[in-house]
Image 1 (cartoon, rainbow, N blue to C red):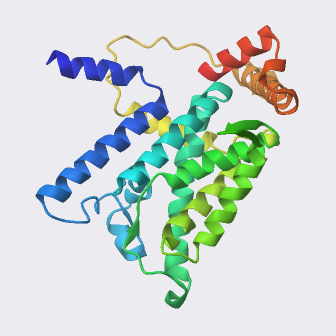
Image 2 (cartoon, rainbow, N blue to C red; image 1 turned 90 degrees about the horizontal axis):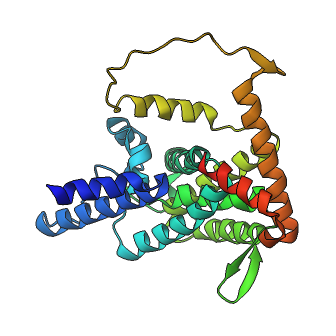
Amino acid sequence: MSTIQDLKYKFNRFNVFEKIIVINIVVFIIGQLIKVFARTGNSLSYLSLPSSFSDFLYKPWSMITYGFAHYDFFHILFNLLILYYISQMLMNLFRPKMALNIYLLGIIAGGLAFLFVYNVLPSRLLVNTPGVVGASAGIRALLIFLGVYMAQTEVRLIFFNVKLKYIAIALVVMDVLGLFGWNQGGNVAHLGGALLGYFYAVKLKEGKDIGTGFERIMDTVASWFKPKSNLKTVHRSKQKTAYAGKTKDEFNTFNDQKKVDLILDKISKSGYESLTAEEKEFLFKAGKK
């Protein structure tokens, strides 16, 4: 019993993306066990997103769950390594909930793109597939978001530095070429996620977070699973508008994001080491909110 409690304690201390990685691993292991004992090659069919829209109507949850299912060891290994690396960068620079919005919306956008293509385009243009699985659409959304929002920022790739915008361009080119290969459905989903990441970055540069509505929905769903408190709620008077039609908290959050944007712009131009101690501390605190 103590071992289970220890595991639960450690899991609760993980950040949101580390938890997603653990869930992916657990689902993969369960899928492998089902594959061995049930002797089936489609052990995660309940979670995969089907190519037929009529089949999708019977399991609408698959629009999300397909992003947590993998059949191949190297597929999940490659995806989770990239997710871990890219999520650490995002969690240090942006709100964790916003990073999660981009990831989950990327999975949904990838799923919608897959369903659209396989139910609208002529079948002669398509490679037959029963469905799609994998976290790649969400990961593409995160990578393209960074490649657009922090286009000039350089990252180390083995022996040399590369700007994020060139990584984003290379990924999109690979996915477009992949449309003519055996994994056509997967590449369609990748491009759907990439489009979401691009659109999210463009709108955020304009000062609009397009994921706030989705975030409220997710917060509501999460609240259904939280234990009820016996403490009485003390009702306070509603916050009065502070500036420009925003509450004080909303105004402060808006200003903090603008400060983060300025720091990110400085990093893009001069590198992380050019930041002052105060700027590094502010960026660190902003990433924890």
